[in-house]
Length: 558
Image 1 (cartoon, one colour):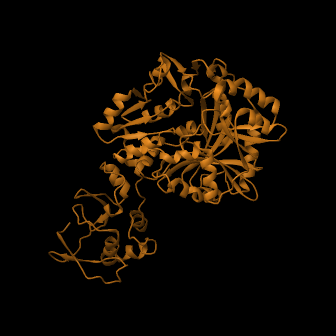
Image 2 (tube, one colour):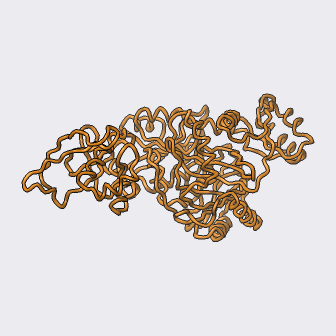
Image 3 (cartoon, rainbow, N blue to C red):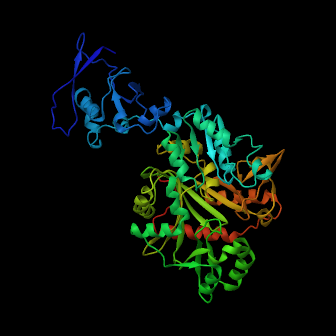
């Protein structure tokens, strides 16, 4: 490379056009055949120059630079030593010194100036993915799991990171030995206590991953200290505060089902008596999950034997929302991430048999009806500040409207257990989201299947779970530890749900059949897998119905 001296010239175009430079040349005046323009990043007075296949995020990742640098830090350079050209300056450089490339990029370049993808496309170069630059084996991360429900999720991340710290807050009026053992014996992770957690925060910048909700304020605080955080922040309120969620739907013009607010179990029973199908949603997530009502005899028995003893004296002040059903031809969901103000296009699109079965397909483009709903709701999410985490929807489709039934502002169950394996290098994607980067994903299988594992014994007893070693990647357990060769699941107040079986493949039927095979191999007290071929038929019918509304279940969308 010849020595170059740069001087800013007078603008040759109106002020809102690209800024041009005159290049003063030494020697024979030639630019040299090696003259090229490279993406680069400015940080703390230093210039980090990439190669032709890099984008700016890849450069930041390679040099471990902050992810949230201002756009002015994203520059270009004609040499490894500078100077740094802004986006508009880079466009002007191309216009003067590489007019053939300029002619290709000028039509696709946004108003702010040149982007690395514009330059790479014009040169016919396939850009290097950020994921290919990431080496998590050189990094450490903390999974902050407030209740122990995501030990399986921490294990998956532990397969990739050089060191994975698993943190459950020690706070409890009466600490118990079983809870203290959650995460112990699992070779992929290292359980840490409060003292160790805060010591890590003081050491240097950390990667902190929140799979669950109820710690949104903590997430925002850790972000304010400069840590990279995966999680939905205080927007989580829109999941567990059902009244707030319904108000948000109304605010952004989405459909709101007819809803009645009820206080007290006896009042709830009186209101439902003699009525047809209704859906009951408690205001406190821990009271019970959303429940369908269609039969007073069954419902009263469940209330009196399970819920009333649990609520005890608070049964008179218990609060719930009673909603009319929404007739629909199919129930479907988006399972992906929200990064600041943009949803991840690469995602899982799923159909669920409630609390039993899920079939998903890997998609590269959000279906139009889902997209319209998600972006209509986006302003409500952004009211709460930073969101860099998992997001899932439950929506029902009919001829006239899309009903946004539920929001999950965390790793859902399902599909969290399946995402870990169906998405290739899943922890790398989570890492990028924490750094504010929209991940480009690939799938280990176009289709996935998940079967929920339940045992009534587990509601109040520690559960020993056995399965063939070859299915270790397929069985995802909650609140568990390992004692020798035995997996033990500690009761957590989440009912009978102790884990899931997942499988993936090129056909949804193959994934389902594999999941059934594995589920039959699981051995646990109070668990017995019941093969229900009707579930396959229901899934197939739902897929056919989904086509009518633009949800494709045949390809990933190239």
